[in-house]
Structure formats: structure tokens, C-alpha cells
Amino acid sequence: MTIPGPAYRICTNRLVLRCWEPSDAAMLSAAIEQSREHLLPWMPWAGQEPITQDERVHWLRSCRGKFDLDKDFVYGVFNQDETRVLGGTGLHTRPGEGGREIGYWIHKDFIGQGLATELSAALTKVAFEIEHVNRVEIHCDPRNLRSASVPRKLGYIHEATLHARLFDSDGQPRDSMVWTMFIDKYPNTPSATAIIKAYDVVGFPLL
Image (tube, rainbow, N blue to C red; front, top):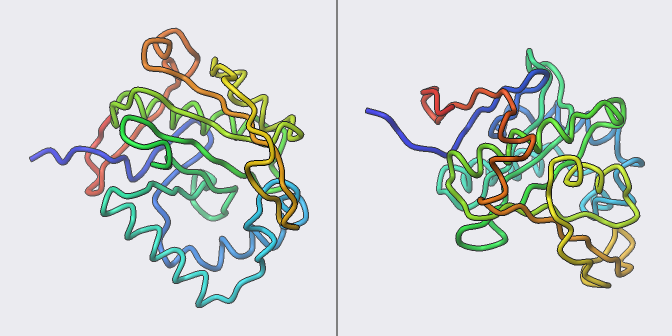
């Protein structure tokens, strides 16, 4: 019997994206510790780091629980043999019914290698071809030029810049760019031709 999505595991040319497990706690903590200064200007949660190992395990269990209940889909980003955390990403349910939001961060040692673009193309494909949503959004700080280049490369449309709607790690208000792709535009974008493999919770191939 085929179990439908979500995709618990996604493989690209260079990456494995998969649902977090509590056993990933040590690898994730190391990646965040090594990248904290790089992440602080863009990721408000980095201001709360470091957290304890128990807190990390609790957060990972929460991610897995939400994944299993179809409430939110947070992925770890790993190298191909899954011996190192290269970042984090997600197909978030924040946009509401019919929509997903892709978020991402990359380990400081791997920025500038196109990994955020690669994983975002994969998640865009999963969102439209497995989740069957109508639109996908990417939000980013306008000052983060690397992050803003990702949706632009993938054919997303810059719909708006929301002013002073979010807060940075110091509690200061910041702007947020909203990039969107709709299902009718998807077939003619780079994400549609991305070569990926996606698997459900029991390892059955979805793509």
C-alpha cells in the first residue's frame, strides 16, 4: 500500500534533506555553534543560542512530532553520507491552506556554493508535485543579498517588501521581502527540471 506524502527524505545532487531526529542533536549543535556569528544578523533564533543538549533534543522531538502530524515540515540539511549538518530548511505551513513557505540557513563553511538554491529548488518541486499546493513563498531580509538571490534565480516573483514587520536578534524591527511562485508558473522554472529523489515515511519513492 502506497503511503502519500509528505516527503520525509529528499536527495539532490549534493545534499540529503530529511526530517530531524533527536539523535541529530550533537551534529546540529556543532553546526550552529560554528555558524552562530554568521547567522546572527539574519536568523533571530540564533540570538538564543547556545541552548542545552536537553533543550535541543526537545526541539528536535517537537519538529518530528509536527512532521508526523502534518503540522509543519522542518528538515535538516546534510552531506550525502549524513555525517555533517550543512544547514536547516523547511516547507512551512505558515502561509495557510494551499501554500508553503521555504526557509533556509547554511553552515558558514558552505556558503557561496549554491546549496540554498539547490535545496530550495528541491523543496519547490516537492511542494508542487507531492504536496500539490497552489503557491510557495520565500521570505528574506532585503539586506541579505545572498538569500534574496535564491528565489530570483528560481523564477520567484518579488511581490512585496513588508516594512518593520519582523524583529532581528537584538529586538530591532526589520523589513521582509516576500517572493512567491504560483503553480501555473512552476512548469517553466528551474525547479521543475531539478533532479531529485523523494521518499515517504517508510522509504517508498514519491518522485
